Length: 507
Image 1 (tube, rainbow, N blue to C red):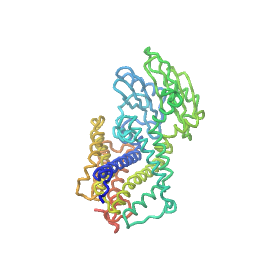
Image 2 (image 1 turned 60 degrees about the horizontal axis):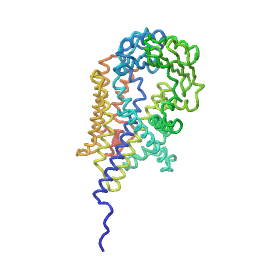
Image 3 (image 1 turned 90 degrees about the vertical axis):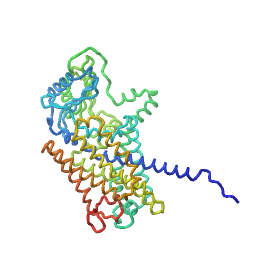
Image 4 (image 1 turned 60 degrees about the vertical axis):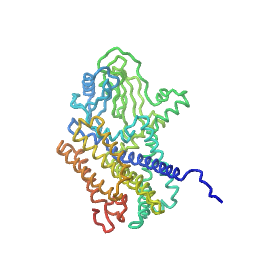
């Protein structure tokens, strides 16, 4: 009796399985990158101060200073100004910034307390990091959609992980050390996932909603407004001013700010947006925040003379508007000061560890079942520890060559290094050694960045000094490890602890 021929050739099946693994690891890599960059982006405003600490700082800007800064910025514009934005000082970023949207695109100026422009904003690495987290440096709609999908995938993984392990809550404080790599990694993965589960759920859910906003609004437009997206956005945005293209002087933002404080004394203005500020039909939009209100913003609309047109305090917002207004603050932790940001970063690193260890467990399980994938282990080790190295390289480049870094240099450095990760499969080196070398390289770069920053700017403020100190602490942790966790020799992801079973530093 002849053997039954398989429906699909074995070679084809192996190729499909390999492609399936590649797809799964690629999406896991995107989730890891989004989690890592999001953790660092919690300090976005502090990083802007660190990159450019030698500009005027202030706690409050007068209406006249805002008007002077806007006028000087518009005078330096090339061609008609479509939009102008003013970011008022706040505790996390105590500086007055004016953004002009003209023929060259967006140009950001920083002014002093009198409104005199002092410098162009220069924080290329912070912008690079933020855009990498928000849209992976892809076109905004596509990149945001992919990042939103990572939030959905992460949320689904968290829920399915809890449901698939009924004892995970009972064993929340049980950790097996020094045994099987897979068991140890699983314990670390489950403990970090359970201890910070509320944070993980909030961050993944808000990230999904923020990333998929375009899709959500599009569905709303199809369902309610016959596909008219502008009508859908009008539900959340104030009306635009009537267009009048006759030339006119700088709008009276000083009066608009004074009227804002008169209408809502408790509201703290944070942002001013101007539509066609050089035209007679210009409009002024002021956003304010009421203390202890995490949800919607106070919104005030004025004509170009500063006369109130519409006032909508946060208290008058709907539940939906309050939720939308709170998404960004909940996602990045920008509502509780520096202590909360530090907590968000620690929890963010735990989420990053959960995402990376999930793949590690899968690879270890394959090895235990006699189906090892050493090429994927090397690729994953290179990606996990290569991303901190690449981010450090881009930060060093931005500090050493700020003019060149304004272009696409940082994106090219990061993308080029990331695309090299698959070639790690060809290396004869063990994954543990790859990870150790990348950690040491990152540690050296972090110290070099701190020293270069100190040489370039000196002791320039508490924020800059604090971040330089954090870089050195991170370098020490990468070099000597985190005490209390011990891994058997060969456990490459677990060995972020940096200790052998004897407790001695890993060579």
